[in-house]
Image (cartoon, one colour):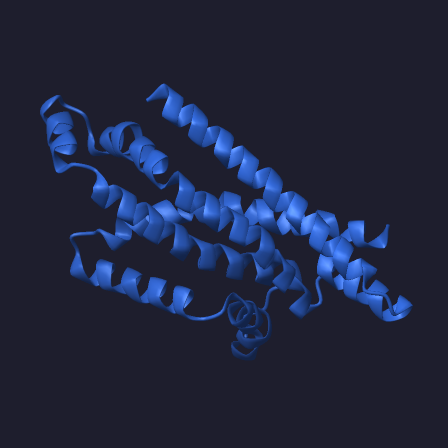
Length: 205
């Protein structure tokens, strides 16, 4: 069916956005907690702007706005840039709160044992942060799936755009219902995956 042709685009935007925005979110969290005031303030402003304005507006600014100052990207790259920057801000705040919830004594003990800063962050702090923030991360990932429907605004052929095209040509609401079912299935699968991860984490603890 024609609507399913847009599934590849939806999944592509979702997967690439998640793969790129989560690591960037870790960097954002670290910069947000920097002892250098200028770095910390710039990061705060970045988070404030990206979280305080609609993602749809950000997509349109990248695709339609940047070319006016001589910076142009194609549709897919514009969408990806907007999604990655937006979700990095959200993931950054989630991870920051997780880092701040870790007892300072753990870092101090690791330093006494001779661990480097990199080893402390990657082997001790980050694994605990991910465990503690897993529900919040899962919620953002589910939101990311639904937000992929915004790509139709710049003419990208995703599930929603195909559904709209079929609905306009047939005068039926069935394509919209089918699109809704597809999104429900995707969010259900992601929810189950995160539930299983949480069970595994809790069992190991």
